[in-house]
Amino acid sequence: MFWAFDVGGSLFEIQHTDDKPPLTRLHVAFRVRSRAEVEAFYRAALEAGARDNGAPGLRPEYEENYYACFVLDPDGYNIEAMLNEPAPQG
Image (cartoon, rainbow, N blue to C red; front, side, top):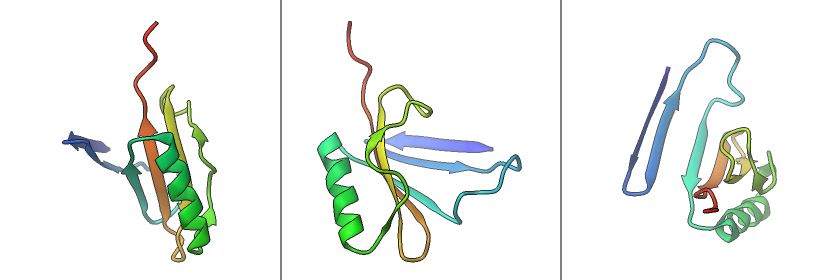
């Protein structure tokens, strides 16, 4: 099952699969406006005590221009900052 909606720049998704166990009990993603915001989120989260779960970088396994980072908060929840940039015009 996969359900998503995108309203006014806010994205909400619910996904459930029996194929594999979840990585964590909860995954929250925040859409940001720039790569600099992804990187600032990552630094601030680590400074606040979160653990690295994926440094800022492209994630082509999701989308060609998907740029994100992942941290685990003190309760073990996966928190993501992401930017899905438009494809370059050629």
